[in-house]
Length: 633
Image 1 (cartoon, rainbow, N blue to C red):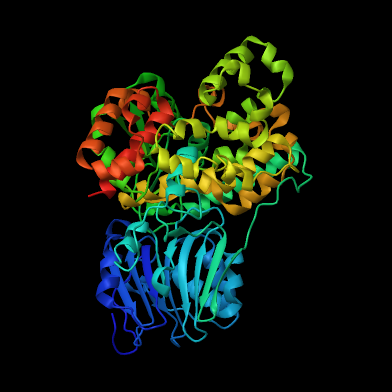
Image 2: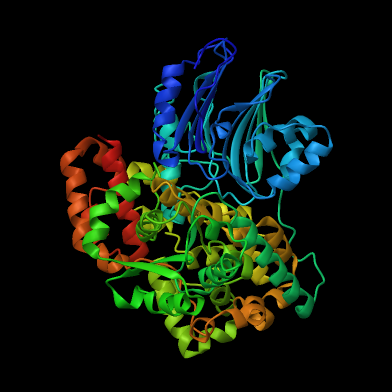
């Protein structure tokens, strides 16, 4: 709130907004409206600060996790009034950093990691972020130097969006907050819509809106009167470590246990998602072991047993509840589960799509919202196994890519089936289909479910399709494709740079924060990620085995039924939940309710074309039409 000296109201943690307008046009009421669109991210407290000259304003919503006292309020400044900070996330090594800073002469007024960020910046400058271990996004205004920094954590666990429209910097934890500022245009970027059908999300740094951008992971944006610049401060070093299997196994156990223990630090009850897969089972087992120790913080909070939470489906082949129950029994957890039905999914689908403020086709977002709400009834913080496939090398497409590139594969029965599937995906007659067209990154894009231009031309109006059809359908993947790496390491690197932050972590953040639940990802501790990425491929995935090192090193911690089960991703039964009839009805509704918008964006024969879509292609179209329908209102 504007006032003498920029007096603070009660800020909090988990959602922030801000405006830097060197012309002095920041108004407290406009900032407040932006801030309160993020109330779900921080229901415990709210704060606002505007500089007296109106050039800078910050707002914050807080979910109290550490230091529940008023001393944890944000926006937070230093005693001399040099900086102001709004911050979202957790710095897990903040106590060690605070001790180091105290030895250097710094004093502290709170027990928060927020204040550690401020003092670390004052002591070491913006390079202090290299010392932070955790998940974070923050905006730091150095009022003395006239600099504003936007910073995002290494893997992109926490989000940050910004706009430079109207000659000022506007930023927030979610797009909806920026769109609450009427000065930011809401024009759709047709190229972003086209790319959405390639990836199932709009790739960073773009969004569906021309004037709104995602700050990439591991990136700093510096804004001054003279201009702005961005730089990347971290990239995992692939294939850089010579450790053999024995040393790697020992180091993996050490890093994993250390990470889980650090990520359990909290002043509120903590639990874990448990899907029944390798990653969530490993995290839940390790967390339950830490919980059982006499000095466990959660036990001091009055919890008798460690809590685990699972979601199942009314379509049996998609449900993993039997495996989750086996793991819960092995670890003796207080286990809670819920079966999500088609009716439940449809009832909440509109709300789930709204979480992302743009087209976002991760169907697993629906069950992830349900499990977040289920967990929030008992805990405020939950751990999950997100990131395990990227760090340990667990995705099935790693093996399929290598098989498809071997000429001998196509002579086998499986190869003949694969050929027919790929012909159907590419919509090309057999006589025109050639394997070289699918080599390397193009083949990877197809395995990731990318729609080709031929399919997109059946969705978009002929005029739009003519403008966009020459675009590279794999450009985002190609940007990160490193031919200097072995095959599996190459795909892991692309997944870490694209699929992980843009889809998996975005899904995890929005669904958990909507339920006011803090979700932590111990398998993405950057020390663990750096070490695993640095191992040679034959050590990380011996014999090409998916998650080979993990299984051989941690197998004694996993129930046999889970250790030996086939790979199965966490996916919703989209085909059964969202049928062709559902899609046809939605197409009719969009054309009937918004004919002008439909004619400018969509193919006139879309209803007939959509009848041939199924699975992920049908779900992408369903998501886009629902978003377009809402945008038109």
